[in-house]
Amino acid sequence: MWHGEGYWLVRFLFQRALALIYLLAFLVAATQFRPLAGEDGLLPIDRYVEHATFRERPSLFYLVPSDRAIGLAAWSGVALSLLALVGAPYWLPDPYATPASMALWASMWLLYLSFVNAGQVFYGYGWESMLLETGFLAVFLGAGGVSPPFVVLLLLQWVLFRNMFGAGLIKLRGDECWRDLSCMEYHYETQPIPNPVSWFAHHRSKAFHRLETLGNHVVELAVPFLYFAPQPAAALAGAATIGFQGWLMVTGNFAWLNALTIVLAIATFSDGVLTAFLPITAPAAAPTPLYLEVLAIAVALLVVGLSVYPVKNMLSERQAMNSAFDPLHLVNTYGAFGSITRDRYELVIEGTTEEELTDDTEWRAYEFKGKPTDPEQRPRQVAPYHLRLDWQLWFAAMSPSPYRSPWFPRLLAKLLEGDDGVLGLLAENPFDEPPEHVRATRYRYRYTTPEERAETGRWWERERVGSYVQPMSLDEFEDRGPQRRRLR
Image (cartoon, rainbow, N blue to C red; front, side, top):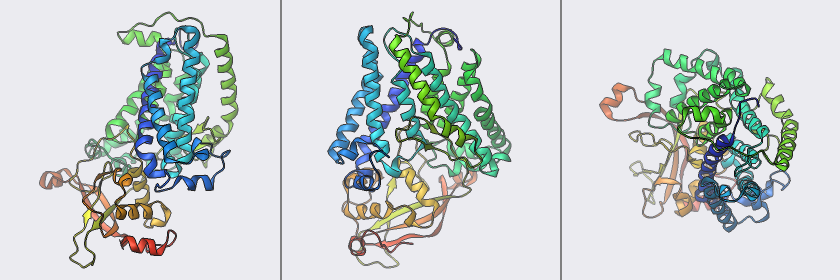
């Protein structure tokens, strides 16, 4: 074997860690999918049904587009994830453990595929495809006292390689700041959802930022080739990847992107390496069942065939990042931060209970769970949980026009209606009763300097850029219809 003998313990740890990621993903679906993309969501599920075919984007919700089905699927996914987390298939005797494991992991994969394909822009992230690709391969790892098919571990390393190497390539081909090593001078301030450590990381020296940018290139462009090397080189490459992803988790909120990459890196280890450094022992495993070996080889052939377009894309000068090339998201292309924004823009949404608007009207801001609004609010740690609305507000703020975010006017209308589902996505609703008017203003945010923060206690300073949506009442929204709004 390429990486040494024994992978029972590697599989055991990998499955528990992946089950935890699935659990988070299904909890997010249970609490957020319906107000975002349900029957009466910001992007209603009927919109998905009307604009896609089942063959293009297969989902259970194409067949049953209802909130009841969404809730049932999400909470079923939570229950199945808990079974996987506690290793339920391992409780069964060996002739039944592997089939039970395959059924469990296949069910989770099918359920989550339904959410990703029906979630529209709110599920358009690279880590959704990566979870599906990883989850599909997990179906064929087996369980109980038998050894996992080694070829499946190689396929997991192949996912990890494309994730890391693709990210490295798109950076070199993208923003010039990756080539002159200055990108990290902007990244911590302008990333989608900063966390409490981001402010401190931003204020490190230029020399520190250049060194970490260079380190980023080494870990993403050189280290991945060692995933396929003999031990202990493969494990050292995996450890470097885990350390790199751990730093990203400490300094930012990227949902479960970093956590899932760490889970994939487990496949670069062997039982011998793990037992040498951890106070655990691996049991003697029986040979992999023949039927599982045959299935694993068939999956490997499928992956090889489906890898053609992702590899062509990865090597192309016009490389696209985070794209799926098949409706089942079996083999995908990945990448992150091919370009870095230099300025941070935020949308501040405010409401008022006053019916007549004057220059003295009192406006109160809605607070979100992750994205910055109040300059005095310390950035929050939310990852690996995924705040989908907050992420989309970061994208929306990049453009001065709300027309590029068709869900945004509907968000404002639901705030005027006092919609419980949408309000549940917020951290704070400043109104006991729905407001009479709402508006959205676009600001440019920057971190305070250490001197400014010592003096004011603020984490941010902000400058008003312009109106994003002028004050609107619910009657005005209804009178103007869904297609034409007085927006600018």
